[in-house]
Length: 370
Image 1 (cartoon, one colour):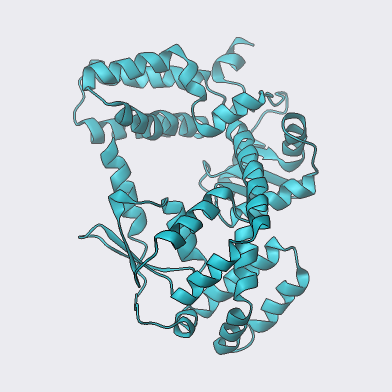
Image 2 (tube, rainbow, N blue to C red; image 1 turned 120 degrees about the horizontal axis):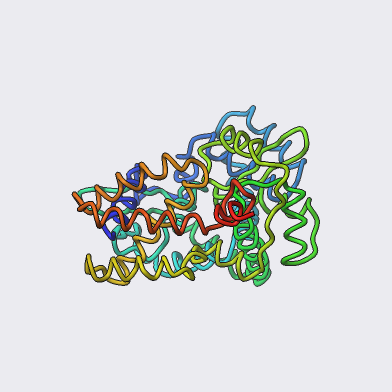
């Protein structure tokens, strides 16, 4: 199972192909980014601040030569990254602090399989021009370069105690939003807001919408689709917006949304809701005794086989079954018929008890028994 995780890391990091020159000074570093990349950061910050004047400013800047944008970016760089970090979450802020603390030499070198940072954080650095990153496959190393001047600006920003307070608030919203959408897959923003108010705290639809938009800049797990009746919130279990909308309009209007407890939403969001069922315990025991799996290997099996199947099963059961069969063959080689049958049927039994997007949070078994 660990091999799967390693392969995912390798494939992810192959996208990092920046040219790194550790003697590049601060001015040259900012100037080296394409005009579009600088504009993108500006636009995201304007959306975060809900500031039409700033958005108009960057639209005006975009008509000028790149050097004008570069100078404006350098002039406002502390404000830009203050806004960015203020609207991030505790995880990004903590990793930023650790990044600045551990960064000692001109270029930071990290081994892919001994990473002190999440891949999500590495991508964050790259997306927002906070670092240039290059992955060398035969070394399994990531080379990260951030000029000293920019690191010092970031160190000064994170001293602000209000940023930590804001990040904590953002993290709570992010987790709550993620937990609710984990139960339904896709839901209207109005119904989402109604459930949020009942389970967590009183807020308004506009605030939730704004939090989703801002969070999308850091994590594309939660998405929005606009319809003539308003917004829909959906997770990345759907291939794209078109698939999400098609799925939403296929849902039965006769079924009401199942409402869970705060604890159950957390279990769904964290991915351990299914672990309370006897089928899960039987499967873990089977994997341990028949395949001599360690606790860590069972964890990866849960992530890459059980949860993957249950999520894809809700959108297309035939594809889910086919993918499970292929993945089992890839990981275990040629399984005997008894092993494959037991593993597949047990996971299917779990999926039938799991909250289903098709039934607005009710499981297949709950709907069947009605």
